[in-house]
Amino acid sequence: MWPDYRIQNLFGIELPIIQAPMAGVAFSEMAIGVSEAGGLGSLACALLTTDQIIEELKTIRRRTSRPINLNFFCHHPPKADAEREAAWSRMLEPYFIEPGLDPKAVSLVPGRAAFDSAMCDLVAELRPNVVSFHFGLSEKTLVARVRATGAKIISTATTVQEAQWLESEGCDAIVAQGFEAGGHRGMFLTGDTSTQIGILSLVPQMVDSVKVPVIAAGGIADARGITAAFALGAAAVQIGTAYLLSPEARISLLYRQALRSNGNQTALTNIFTGRPGRAIATRMVREIGPISELVPDFPLAGGFAAPLRAKSETKGATDFTPMWSGQSGHMACELPAKEITQRLASETLAKLNSR
Image (cartoon, rainbow, N blue to C red):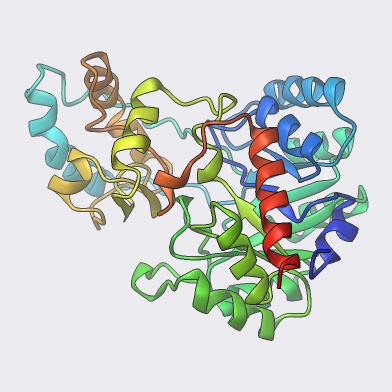
């Protein structure tokens, strides 16, 4: 027996396990595997066009009728700042010169789309069971339209204050993102990474501060972590890094090798995209420093290092590659997503019911 069934009842799933919506990594195959196992599969939409989202969901619906979560970013549009962008270009110039690249060969086209009316129209058409947001919530009129479709709405909080705000805006559940979590921080009421706290402290404080179910995320990769999350008062867990070595994860061989060898060497950094996120520490992170005030706004910063990343990867290196990972990278499991989910559930239940 699970100690809490609120998330299963809310989403119509069997297991209190949610697959983290990892943009650029997790697509229909992973969502299908997790949902078929009884958890909640997620499709990250921030890097997809509306046509791609439709095709991915068609693939999902051909293979499972179980609940699915569509995830969207809701960041503010980036602000152009010529002085700041020039300073960042100067910072990166030595790295361009080293392999003979043109320091001006950058793209400032935003690489991640924020939720807008077109995406909202798509949600109204596709009617997913769950819609999740990252970086707060979209504007009230769009959120109201999403709610009118019948979808349950969740978002990420990194502080108690963010959780309370999300609850006041009508979220059905809240993801408590501990400092250990991989990928972009969901912070939206603060920009101060120095005050972000770990999951052991965050979850119980959040549980005590809101009435809606809290979903623990960050550093959870096995039954011990899930059991601990329930002990802290969480109603479910959201897991991402544990799936990164599954065959469904669309990451490069270099990324996989880095997870195996350096998966416990992560840093919270903003230099890849302009927004803080946890990733494996690379040459770029070590030499420039993980956090820089010079980096352009999210997501424009991603275009600056793109040529460096491409050149480096052709030589078998990941010096400039953002390889998002939580602090439990070495605990990632090389099994299909469905089997990982089933194993996590069965081993957790064995622990819970042996007490």
